[in-house]
Amino acid sequence: MPNADFLPHEFIHSWNGKYRRPTELYQPDFATPQQGALLWVYEGMTQYLGSVLAARSGLMSQAQFRDVLAMPASYLDYTPGRAWRTREDAAVASSILRDGKPAWSNWKRGQDYYTEGEILWLDADTLIRKTTNNQKSLDDFARIFLGKGGNTGPLIVTYNFDEVVRDLNEVTPYDWATFLHDRIDKINPHADLAGIERGGYKLIYANKPNPSEASLSGKDAGYFDGVDAWYSVGLLVSGDAKILDVRWNGPANDAKLVPGSKVIAVNGQAYSGDLLRAAIRDAKGKSEPIHLIVQSDNFVSAVDIDYHDGERYPELERVEATPAYLDDITKPLASSQPAPPKSTADNN
Ligand SMILES: [Zn+2]
Image (cartoon, rainbow, N blue to C red; front, side, top):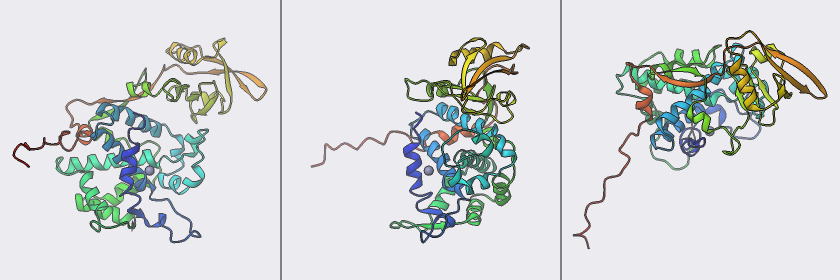
């Protein structure tokens, strides 16, 4: 399931990225640097359409699509680096942000043009559906934008920002230039959740992981086996008790915890992931802080986290009596079974 969008993603790249490519990402020689300002189209729209195709083709269910969508949407919404860095600036810096290290990535931002592009194109898709009474969608844009030039041999056809705007306007007239500028090169402290809300859902925080997030946990499954307490105390702790990242300005950050330290004890007992989760739950509504002992290099110190709102995990909740565009988007376009072949009895 976690890799359900892998094949659809790369399939989409045949058109979006390999055939249509931003002018500044198509260099005629090795001396000219690439410039990634339009990666929210190259990777962002591919991320969106790849996930949509994974659901439409049954590689993941519609419910799994929503569960999985809740995770980047919440992470983006809780990325404090948004307060100083725009989407476009982080895309231009892609080559130096591509280090794969989580530490402080919520403050410096990273390659989140994938996921931010995903929720931006969901915003555009639901906006087209709403303004056209669900008669048109991003599929119409894809036919125009990706289908230029007809059926050709291998070829790279470049584009720029203005062409994206023109093609969106061909689907349905709107101030698309402002729509995109507002989301790409302006400072937005919060994530663009309009597509989820127009899609008939809202992002909420529950006290346990959603079913898909839960299935992505556990060493046996080969996935992350640590503690994801990102939306509560603001900590990501590995299976071997190492602090992988601390949410900037979160409760753990206020307690001066830093990535790279190791958690030795929770409330006077030797550390385990279950113990940390239980401590977060038990501190809810009480005044006593969560007591940790942490080790940095050879130094051991006691740290108190003053946090009392319990565990928090993202999920999407249906808003009843609103159009569920999100479900229209993720259902198959055609019936899943091809028509059975006609009887061959009369054939030779
Ligand atoms: Zn890609």
